[in-house]
Length: 583
Image (cartoon, rainbow, N blue to C red; front, top):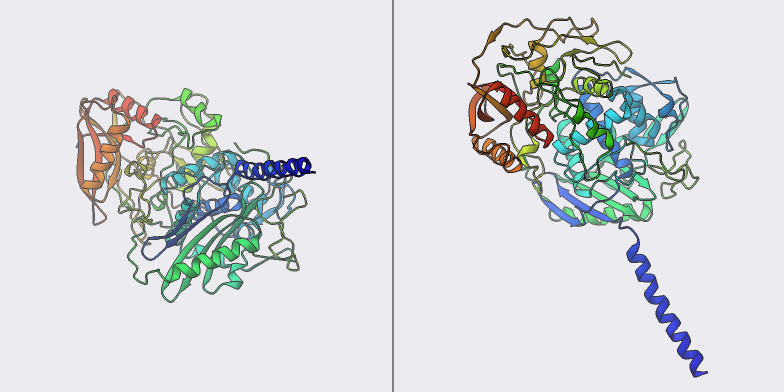
């Protein structure tokens, strides 16, 4: 009897030890982060910088890029999007539109916000990027530029992929940028119901109806992520953004969010001391393009850059462009107004709870039903078919603006090297509708002798801070073909070309709001490329753009050939740059 009791005790002990071991082996899903929007202070951080799966929170970035294109004047709410076979085959949650069906941009945005429709997210990606893969490149570039240093996207919807990761902190940053950069468009996140083709869909974010002051923004769910939520709430002059990852149910996630926000309000500030990144978006021509730098697939003709891997495990397509580089051309431009592998999902996954029309079940019930081109740019170089769609998408989105100011997130500011102005685009392009061929412009001749032109800046339409793009300058430099009639605002400009003496060229990595910022950026790049820049002097050139003082950060003392090769090597290291004749 004693032996049996002893054996039973040993068995219980062994079993009790095995359970924690098994639990410890399970992947961590939970994280929580609360940010004071007024002050930028972090009020709660529980694994906020730990790598997690964002699920449908991914669609916040998909919408960010959509809003950029709308603000640039190259996409309208009334424009129609055609559903491709790839989009139609996306895993649920979805609107279930058939291939060839059309949906307006306005309805697409609401479908992504409320129903979290994966098919529509893919359709938007194809409309903007030409292909889903090209759009993902843009997503990752934006994430890097916004300071989302631990985020890497593999698709526009958040469908499961081991390499598709983010953090609660990064998602808080993205929420802030949506509010700061698109205050009008951001209001769509408060949409409670979406009516389409006789059906009404409720927003998955039930916090809109159950917690005072909530104005958005997005929910997400996959088996790998658990129940995720980003919430924005205003009360009594205070404004918080909360992020919860890995809830066991939607109800448990919402309950945790309510507790976190209620506690955080006792420490939140009513004084608006946080300074958003000083970059604005204007409607209209290329000068209106929003902020982030687009790392184009390779340098061609003007000064494009090859795409850099954006995570520790880059997709092969990112690296393939390196073997197709062509020489850089050099331009001298006048300053213009500035501002500061898709993977097949598991059949049992969904990027959000399966939604039904208005009489659907409560949000706490996840989907357990096992459902969980634009025009091509032609360049003057050899075979660039893989990158043509991306270059078109980059131009249509608008190129990176020169930046002033600091990051809007006081808790973590991106490294200075992450905020340079974009290089000129690989090819000046006049864009038409997605179904219309893209007009081609001939590139300027390559050195020697080096062709240098002077481009007159376009006057910006004021909306926030005055932006500009360096690609717009290069676009204006080579204005030989006329833009399509549908886009008259993209007027080609005639330029005068002169020769420049060899031996006095500089490599510019960005323009900044202060000498200190410019010098920090130069020091950062020198640290990353010590051997390449050994003995190379760095300079800062003060300039005034649209009434604002800026400082251009450059490395000097190159001849034309070495300047071009140095810039190419810097791009391989992930540094934006372009070549200028010395001042």
